[in-house]
Image (spheres, rainbow, N blue to C red):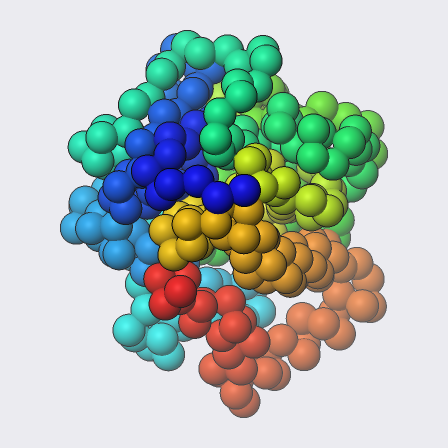
Length: 373
């Protein structure tokens, strides 16, 4: 199917994937409408780690100055055991000084993208519940893990419950917080925390527990239950958890990367195409990469079907590799017994003898430049 480059595009979902795609498409001259069922774009989730592969897209969209103003730098990743004893340190600022790793509250990034999309001429229709998917020249499903479009392209799928429960909370940040993502690894559980700016600190804690089966970010949890699950952790963790008065809780499910991302008139991006576990901090990043790549493919080829096929071919292998790496981290963070002791000793030795090796293992991830397409 060949359509003019100015054919209207409809995006379902005004999250990070949908709004970034709207910006990228509108800046290229496409007429874009975004349909969002929520009556307003509110906070869902909390903190995000945005690595340089996504920052390059935000810069190409002309949004870097605004993004820098709403985010804070992440200078390193610190891995520790459950008692707070150092295991490894990935010194991003020292060994990758030209790269920009940022930490941001999701709500602030969504607000930035919404404003940029509107400035580019995107029409955003809030409070628009999509019960029947519209018949339009191009429909983009950016509507997350419960996408209405994905089953039309892939049939009904049943995600696999991982036996892990996650909590997410915000607490006040201490003065001059460590500009780092800190990971505390214990048997069958781990906790990640980092500052978000604006006096906030983000906490995500994951526990292996097979009795939780709901999927979603906004399910209220019990702060006392979170504290009990991590009661044996040391370092700064007890002080952080003592400040938690509200917490969200959800079950972690493993979804396959979609077998079919597009059919010539419909396409999936972001979590609708490739939900990931939160163990590599690449969920939002993959959505941003998708958005740019989709827009670039559509702008480069007036044959819409060919452009969408190219988009899928470019993105699927990379997203699959990222998700496999996240799954590996899920295992490595939760090691028990002698395996845990040996693994931590190995990480300490590598960090001491070859401090750049752990960072360079992920050069393929961070060096990627979607804007070079």
